Each structure stands twice: as C-alpha cells, then as structure tokens.
Length: 310
Image (cartoon, rainbow, N blue to C red; front, side):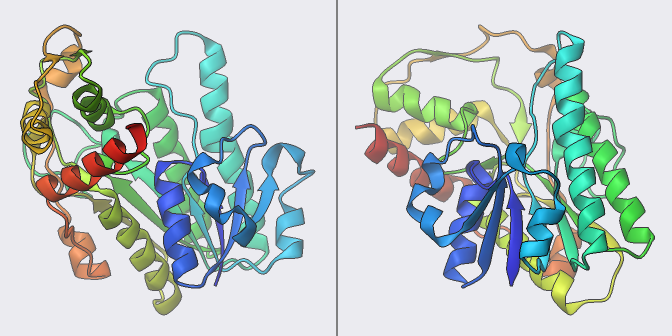
C-alpha cells in the first residue's frame, strides 16, 4: 500500500517507517523543512518526501500518488501556553493543517485516516481503568486541540467521505525517544549525573514502542478489511507503574548508583495521577494487546542508550 505519514521524523513515526518498509509498503513522508531526520537517515532514500512549507497545496501529493491510508502522528506539543502565540501555533499544526489534509484526502478517495491521540485527553483523576467511554477532561491546551481535531475527523467519517481510527496512546517509551522521563532517568544512570524530578508517585501505563507500532499496523489492516465508519482505541498496558518503580528497575539494570532526587520539582497535577489503560476494545476488535512487559522494555531501552551514549 501507499501510506502517507505525518510526523515520521519523530519517535513513534521513525519506528513506524522502519516497520512499514520491512512490510514492503511505499512511504510518502510529509514533514517540515526544518525537521531533524536523524532517526530515519538510513531510510531517506527509500521514501518519498514532501516538505509542507514548500507545497502550494496538498493536492500536489495526491495528484502524484494514489494514497491508500494516512497515518497522522505530527503535532505541536507545548505543555503550557504563556502567550497567544503558542495558542496560534497549536491551532495551526494540531487542527488546521490536519483538517486541510483530511479534506483533500476525502476528495481523492483515500481509504482511511489513522489519527493519534493521548491518554491525557481523559480525566486523570479517574482511579479506575480508563476505557474509551471514560470521562474526557483535557490536561492542557494541547490535548484540547487533539480532541478538537478528532471531532473534525468524525465529521468527515460520518459524512461518508473516509474511514477513520484514533489510537489514544498511553505513555509510549523506547529507543530514540524524546526527552521524556524514562530517557532522562536512563541517561542519569549511564552518565552518573544528578536528576531532579517530582515526587515520583504518579503511576502511568508505560507502553513499549514495538507494541505501539503493532497497533498502527493492525489499525491499517482493519481499515482495509472491514466496513465501518469510525472507531477509537486505547493503546496501552493495563499495568500501572510509578516513576519511582521505573527508577528502581533501571537501577537494577544498570547496577549503578542512584543520583535521582525526588520531590525537587513541584507539579501538583502529578500527585493524584494513577493511570491504568483498559485495552479490551483493542483486543476484541483489532486483536491487539501489549507483549513487552516493563522490565523487558526498559532493558531494551537502556541497552540502546548505553550503546549510543558511550
């Protein structure tokens, strides 16, 4: 199949591109000129690239290629928005751009659009497992824009113009990750450096990258083989682990001194978080479930960073 990917230079996108190439799919990558391609440098000659800031409109891509499926991973993430400038940026990249892409795709007969969401869209005060019917309460403006675009996607789907799926991801981690908590902890051990964190009591459903990629592959196959309108799926482990537990596991893996100090950074929202993903719907419909447990995933991730940093 010919697959158009946004956000292919990022953590998840790079892993997805490598897997799709293994499966002999043709990749069309939509990116910004300034995007750093270090994660996919080995595959650049195997994919077709369009720079969004150099396109007159999206029709150019669809006139050149018969796209089967779009996988939307890109977005402008900012935890906070101190000025209206950040609001404009997130609106543009998280709502306007994908909406325009979706509109053109629906006119050119693209089979399906796979959207990427996040568990931060749900009410994080929920102490039970989070399923697709759980209460929505966006964590910040970024997650509010993600929810807004999902509604736009539903409009196109229920208008009969395209099939759509949203995968709501729960704390992905793994090799080539962004500067999130797990890579920061791992680097602290490898480099023997101090790291200041919050209390570390917040519990999350950490999900290893290969399991996340498997969900996208299954979502693609579901679009091709099934007649439906729109579905959303939670993609994550049903096991909840605190950041302190992660540190203990990594300390055992590294056999090094712990230089991490908890409670230095204050984030009141984190204290009550206890996230557990209910992936029953994904298991029933996509036949998806996580295969890599936290200890195994952390060992794979640690080994990668140890090799790349030393």
